[in-house]
Length: 371
Image (cartoon, rainbow, N blue to C red; front, side, top):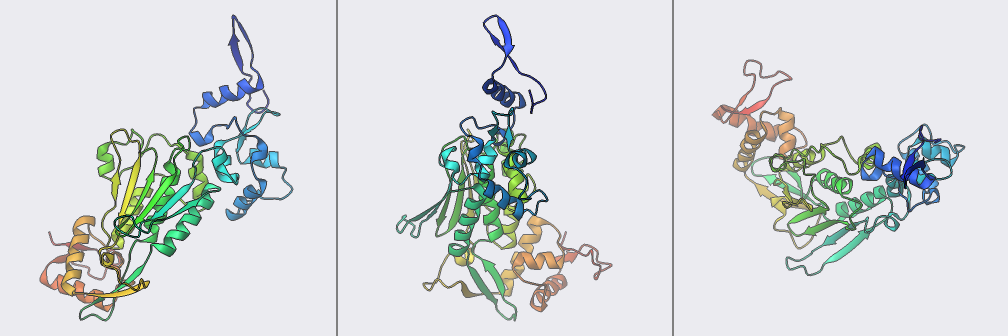
């Protein structure tokens, strides 16, 4: 069979005969045991792949194969977006997810729903639905969340010239959480990714939950290393577009972004059957009491003793850090004068210490909680 490297045969009655082209497609699909997005879609045709969307993607990733003179069939084979013998080629599911303008024609409810609950009782609820190619859904929903949910607050420190800057939610955490949900959801289940924005949190939910190869202990330790990927090819495309990072880095990055902003840790919610996963991002404590103006930049004051407590908390939880890393973790742009005053005071009292006390100016120097 051209295109596969071997012929397929099936058993009919008491005879073994050459499979029909349609049977070959099914047999090849089962033989490879790939992730869902690498399966051939038997209900679609090659006409369902939009060539302009393919070329737009290749342009975005600066591919060397985006030449206009490459025929569609050859281009799709080069990108491994279809399979099967000549005359009976079928697009892979990932091709329909990324390069069809209406993926929901093939995957019911393959969209992102964003719900804003303005009041604690659910009053003033506003919903937005984002459809189209998967990367388009991600960009559109992130744009809305950045405009509507991400706010900056300036925190003035008593006796200090430099103020702290904190965000209601670090956008990097939101971005990673949304991409993670879209990547790990099942497109065989007719349920959307849902994002619920409440006055005190953002919840991102996808179905089903983590793979059963990830233990409860792994979940508690934020080690989301799976032995099976539902949408491995989709993840590759999203990484090429800069929307996702390496495998198994999503959850750790979300926790890191939240901690660097001074926010509370996210919460991972699932059930015994792993039928869903919900990631809850708490709003930064400074935003629990919002002003009536809704301004993007708001002011409050924090005492130096509060910042010293934050230093001890961060170093206790995350270990020794450089001055620059610690300053960023506390919300400072740089390790400026006000930050250094706090650190010097804590060093003098013995609350914290240098990792290399004999070389205080070493570029490898780290600050640690006193042992």
